[in-house]
Length: 102
Image (cartoon, rainbow, N blue to C red; front, side, top):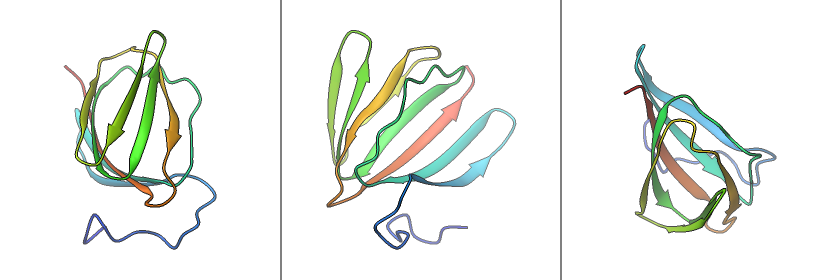
């Protein structure tokens, strides 16, 4: 269990670090740490509320790219195809992501 959302794993990390903060049948909250990491294309069945707590990132959709900075939020709808195209390494990205069914 994470005691402080800013308490990071030892850097550098070879892949994103994901910690589930809370989970029920219909909602899941995760703290994700990225440091220069990207993802492939994602197509999720859940809605995802993304809050970038620290760092800078780019989320790419099929028709647009969205630049995120510290404190920005983004709502990703179910089956809205997207990928993490870029994440800062210094400072690393600290994400709070809430996944839920509508």
